[in-house]
Amino acid sequence: MRISYLECTRCGEHFSADRPLNVCPNDGGVLFVRYDIAGLKGKLRREDLSGRMASMWRYAEVLPELPGNEKPVTLGEGFTPLLPSREFAHVFIKDEGLNPTGSFKARGMSAAVTMARHYGLKKLAAPSAGNAGGALAAYAAAAGIEAHIFMPKDVPLANRMECDYYGAHVTLVDGLISDCGRMVAERIKKDGWPKNNDGWFDVSTLKEPFRVEGKKTMGYEVAEQLGWKLPDAIIYPTGGGVGMIGMWKAFDEMEELGWIGGERPKMITVQAAGCAPIVKAWEAGKSSADKWVSEMWVGAETFAAGLRVPKAYGDYLILDILEKSHGTAVTATDEEILAAMRHWASVEGVFAAPEGAASLVAYWKLRASGFFGAEDTVVLFNTGSAYKYLDVIEARERKARVELPATRSIGGIIGPY
Image 1 (cartoon, rainbow, N blue to C red):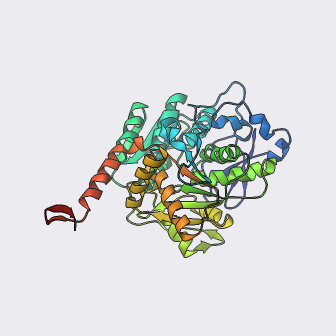
Image 2 (cartoon, one colour):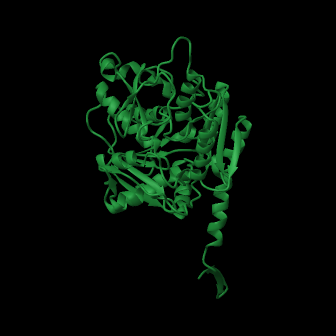
Image 3 (cartoon, one colour):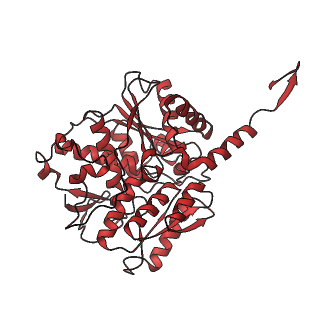
């Protein structure tokens, strides 16, 4: 479907999508892509999806339409399995680790790079905690576009290596993703688009409108895979939060299409205890001009690299979704995440990324607190594959062994004491 306009999620102003834009030029608000969904109602039916390709592009009518013979830049992303839990009735695991490049980031980058090629952009730049960088590198390579990626120097080895092999230009930074983002912004301000038509264009999280479009397809898939009945709740590991924001947008679009009713799942954010700005803001109930805001998290630390985001650009959208959906926000310690990774692997056969395993921690806690009952249908998102994290998992395992209590021999038996 052709784009009607881009809409600022802060001030509501509309902009043409005829040329690339990053954020709202008035207030820096996140831009959403808007279509004539009402005009599509009745023309596109749920049953029309039957037999289509098993990728996110099966929902082409609610994604940007490309003119002429232009095709999406795709590596087969999307339509990942929704696995029924072997341990808990009514619980499902949406396994995004089976995407190209091993994470849900493939969806957003497929859409963003597709539109970058359509606009004729030559160089794309982004900060990354790991998986977004690998996805950008892969899709940029497939599109013949130059990629410039800034990563913390302690990024998982697999992320750094894949970017290198895909031919991206990688800068390792002694700092967090927020420091990487600042460096990208400084470079673009100096010599980027639109100042220089051949300069860098920023495809950072929520700094352009199309990564949300790719991520929203997770919402369409959950609905389709559950027979067009949304679950009671969705637990989503939240760093930048684009997946949650995208799914919420998808639910609104599906309702307008007549595919679902007005029901919505409770949206649950889970963050690492060592970097939990959304949880802190949610618990504090802070708001500014009727928009939720969070504060920069100082001293962010967790081995779940994708959750080490000191402040999400779209924090006001995430917190608004939690409120509207009657959801909540939960933290998970690194120790809890590591235990959940082992548990999911041994019980469910899912080798989840640390960020994904945090979803299981949140479910355990919310079941124990009574927030969820045994009959609630809940979807837990595993956002990536643990195979991308083998070095950091091993390092965290070593740290856990060192932190065990000292032992001493008692009566010929050696054990913890």
